[in-house]
Image (cartoon, rainbow, N blue to C red; front, side, top):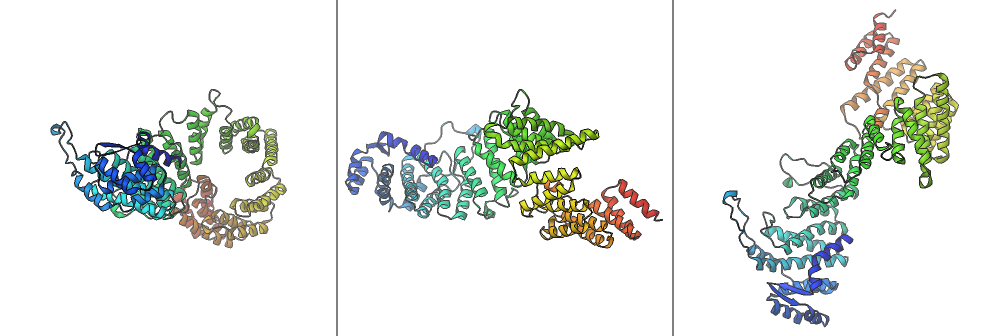
Length: 605
């Protein structure tokens, strides 16, 4: 709203300050005209303008309408704007507009530009401005559908006049201002009236036609269009074939088109063609995160000109991007620089992120525990609610550190401290399902299967059974307790609740449970189904998933073939064993387990 008000003030500033009307090189004070308008003598006011400024009837009504609009009398302005002959204005402007300039060799270019006929063009542009102000008046009165039609008529008229596009030599300043304001206004009018497909067409028309817009206006339109595509919930129809350049990239959906617009904007900012707008990078972050393309976002952040972000802000943002892209090492290196004693060593968010990343690697776990302890120490005052996150990261780091080869005493100590930290985190985040799951995993690794079973059930209850890893964990805990039939029941229940595309890990677990129950024939059937699923996934991209999910849910085709070979060997189906080993060898040439099975196949006795 403030932006629209500033536009109106800028376009009317000269008239409001001087309180004079200008036309055809003549000037006239508005005092007398305003008095006649106040008295309701529109005809006399129009006659005064025609005589004082040498105007025809349409031009006089356009000036009077503008004056009423500036005074806030919208109904009066509409009465004056009604009846203006737009087609007559188009004809006059077509007559005054010069033909398109022919390319001229630089050596033969004239030193002084040719003078264009200004007066007729100014008169016609005055009428076009009146139609634009009519649209603004209708908008303010809540009649947005009518306003959109009037605004569209302005642009249609200009396109008829300048069929080759507008250039600086062909149009006066006032007309260019009217065109620029109308181009920006039309999409918002269609949105306000609920005609979203027309709004999309208006945005594309604004960006594809040659309106001679300045860089800032074009940047505002691109940003508004991208935001609309991202957040409106309206699926945009594909651009028309007529507007596409041969060989150019055509976006397939809203997300791709929004990302393209935002990346073009970033390039404009970097080249200095438009003023920096911090919200653009925020929208681009959202868009690229939706499609798991944070590595592309990192590249965009690296190309942003120095001075826009502080170096610590840039490092932290890049660390987030690289961590989401699975590049943990690069992310940790950036956070080390950010948390250096000469930078911002007490940045709580950076400390917690560094601890989380280090908790994923045993070799970095000790370093991560240090970051987590500093995070817990700094989580005070308004940030005290983050102490639970710090304790959780500390518990994960200590648990991962306990897996590094060390003495039994040291391993036991680290595991005990890990559980203590996670139990402390529960006091702050007792409703956090992920924390409940991690506590269960820590207890399972310490062979406290009773506690692990309790926490796995709590996790399933907290998530409503909608998270696959909860069912898998419970089945694993039950199998560790030698309760194979119960584990299989849990696995079958999870399969019923899981989409077929995501059933790979559960099928592998079910096959192993069948083997544990000495049912190799049923295990073979499960492995065959799993193999078909894995091969289908390999041939298809499948749904968009994050890297962490893909790693967690990954089912190795080599393992499936090798598992089948092992099962067939137990059934003495040696020909099938040979086929499976050959397929496994094509995927992984050297494998100790595969060579062992192959040796058993060659020496069955």
